[in-house]
Image (cartoon, rainbow, N blue to C red; front, side, top):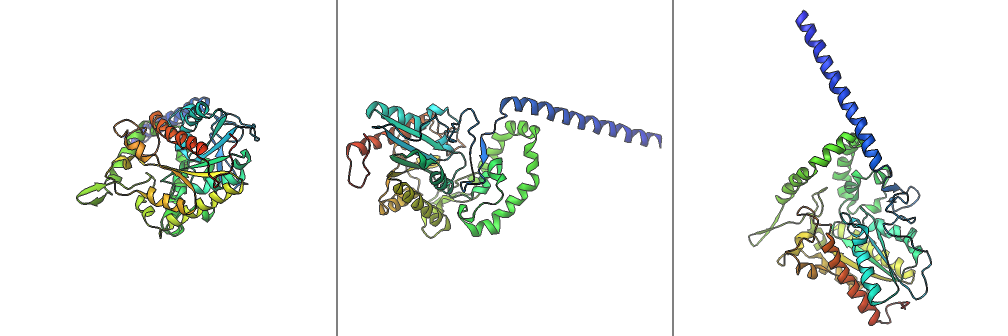
Length: 375
């Protein structure tokens, strides 16, 4: 009896010691992380349909919620103002603000054209839906002459899966059906995944989780990559990747068929955005950003061609930097081998070269279909 009682007491002391250690570590880590980043990058936008935005109180973000310097709402005379809409690729995740293709393009155009402003309105996690309403409700106030949408091909993924780590987006509990590319799939499959996540989301608020995640993230990403590498498409004896995000199993192939809900969703929103831009007297341009595995010259799935055909029917100018990227495929254009979306400084430079050359040509060879530019 005595030995059994002693064992219980010892186990109780051990568990209490472990609990105190965990609580102590949590408190210490919260002080440490709190001193590093007590200003959140995102804010929920309850009154606006674009759901969330960047926090103007963050040191890298201006008063309009953009990762850029301050610009007056009214541009100066004889100044060409260009607005770049996009997601984390345009925002420049992984590179400094002045190394993004928006700012590199601005530097090049200042040399060739003179008075030019290129405003970086990229916001991580945004899809075409967010970009449409962000432009209509906020960014249009800049009265840009040219509005460029940088389209990443992962825009057709269910955004709520991508937003699960974004507290500002998650805090807006009701997301409009129009924000979901495939509503049937969302109702039948994705909504249950989101509910499961919500039950355990409190864990991600722990500082200990953040510490463990920082050490384990690369391993988890590699395991997830191996999972997606098993979902390859075989053509003529060769396997090709088609994943567009780590959060879901959606294939790039849905953009190769104009009958899919994802294609219909994306093109309807593009049409809506182009109309809004033209209503403001600006010139819309679509920049189609390539995925890392598309740099292989034999890669068979290129929705870029279909998207350009759609834009041609709508009389929308397009820029496709994929051919330029393929010339540098032996260089490190993407942040790492797992990241097929975000560019290194070299990747941003390639996009900036393509953008600035296109804008230069646009200014030199003006047509009646393009509104008058101020320079």
